[in-house]
Image 1 (cartoon, protein in one colour):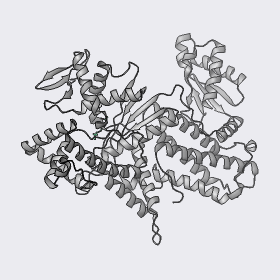
Image 2 (cartoon, rainbow, N blue to C red; image 1 turned 135 degrees about the horizontal axis):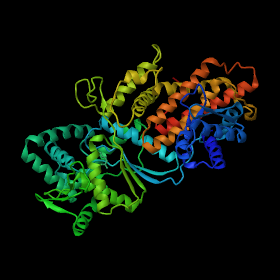
Image 3 (cartoon, rainbow, N blue to C red; image 1 turned 90 degrees about the vertical axis):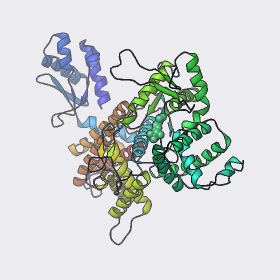
Image 4 (spheres, rainbow, N blue to C red; image 1 turned 60 degrees about the vertical axis):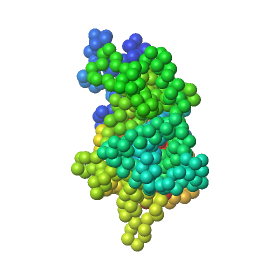
Length: 576
Ligand code: ARG
């Protein structure tokens, strides 16, 4: 409806010779008075030197002359209040009923995007921070795709830095790796992911106190990056073991990647790229390392140089990110690259993006953007930890929510289905994360996230189950004559308005990369549906027109819940 109102109000502007750039229509701030409003008169008043109320009155008069689905009213000091009538709402219901996208428009000129998210590190257990990146990135990927963009999700594994040298050095102490160096790569890796997960923290701690060990890890990193056979073979096994485990974790979270690239994937690009930077005169040496200045004249904060190569010759986080950009441009030529990592990496990306522009790795119009997020905290307001105070691993977090959901779903005698419990638990986890503004920290409270009566994933899944059970009860009698519907009550109007707001929220979320807009609007829709459900006995309703109208509303709500939960990356359940 808002689109139609905009179109018609624009025509009024043209007819009255008002500048159309000043034309704005929004959802009403006072739903008790009207459905939509326009505050354009105040802006026009300045430009035209007239009273806002007179302008609003002229617009109302013109609007009411041409429009049959709504009435406009000028209200002091100059608002234009627009109320849609039953004919307008009924038409909207019919339109939504036949729209496979539930009123969500495709973007004009949808760009091609690579989304860099997840970002787990090989041989290091995934932790709570990787969960946020995966959850937010997955939803933004699905949304962009739904809006018509060509999108590739890239996991960008951390598989090429010093941590690999550390793990290999640590492994070498526990296992006999000589086969790898004698050209007899074992058929199956001798170590498991649990071994790796133990080795990394040990090796990392030790490197901080044992200079020889640190030096050894540095050397191994350099050798690996030069693809020295034995080290490269060990690395391949480490990556394979790790990826299998990472895949299993992400699968439980319903997170999928199109590209399983890593820092290592661009390895052949790194040295030629850096040499080219040097040839262009853009690099300098500093203590044996190669760096690039990326300061700009009007910087108001310190901007450290980009680190391209260590004195050992090893590549760094900056260099692999730059080479990845180069590779992406060559392989896919995207219009935009989005990165979802925690806020602490903001400086890193600013440096990388500046270097990419300075060196011409991307086109002028290529958009590079880092979308940071806040931390997941415990009830004490500090980063979320295990009961024992250790880092919360993603695996443990998934078990924790699954068990909590299982408890909630089982009713004494009957124990809950494991897969359904995982879905409900993960829905709570994901919605709990996505509904908070991405840029802020939030408190992880699984009991609160799982509550049935609140702004939670459980509430949304439950609403969907409820609608599906209405259809199960109705059986064959759900076929309605859509031409025979008529919207007559506020309960019905409310649902339709909330549907439109939700469709609008898809675009707000896309613009600002803030899934909380969709989460809020979805909750509002579910809420208005449940209020309606609480007072209308759909199944027993004898009036055919009413019954058809209600069934149509149920159908669209169901479709919109399914569609939106899918965009958020949340799986649904058939019973609860
Ligand atoms: N592996 C990194 C980490 O755990 C995140 C990678 C983010 N993506 C990137 N292109 N740097 O912090």
